[in-house]
Length: 176
Image 1 (cartoon, rainbow, N blue to C red):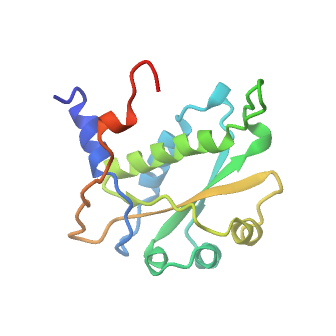
Image 2: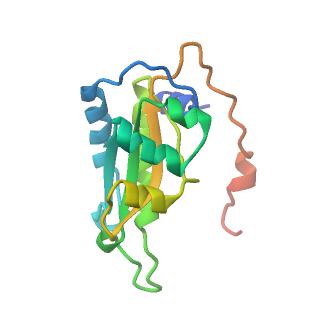
């Protein structure tokens, strides 16, 4: 039995889209998605992030140089998730920097919001951050953490079957 059928459906429809149509994403839809990102939680509500929307040819080429995969080139636009380490909460006991954790939460809000309106996304973390940082003229305190291509999937694109570990393999009750 699923206690949250609408949310469960949304989560099962979210996948790493690698085949985008050339259909333009309306700006108001993109703004609505980014407003969901704004509402994401973060440690001590520091919100140590910036989201840079890349929709022009010159900046898109910078991203494509940082991650050279054929599928990546066909995305109509990209969002670069940037962590601001100097704004993040750091755990007092050991100094653990929560920038990447907070940005990851916000990026998944982005991906789920995009899925809810029929858009596809993909987390891209295997890129050259130096190329992105220099090519986009990011300040010293800004770390590009993920690039999210976003757009409409090509017509007929099917959500692939999810291959996940069994719940018993990842959840332990009381002791590890």
